Image (cartoon, rainbow, N blue to C red):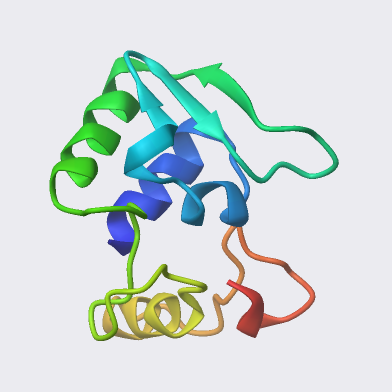
Length: 110
């Protein structure tokens, strides 16, 4: 799931909450995605590139509700800070805790 989150963030510029709140039931339409949580804005449909739409459609086929879920609990994924840190360590990247979609004030806010 981390790869998908990072790809969506890089390709769209969406915030963490916008990505983690994506739902199968109401979020995905042909080449448009409904962003539920947007800083100070109402929910809205935004166009997406076909590669992003394909990625989201594939994720939607594997879930009943939220596209990103905790593998242990099956509930909506709330953050991915620990997963990001582990990925950085496995890649041999030290001290890189801030991802553009993370809150740079604290590494625990991914």
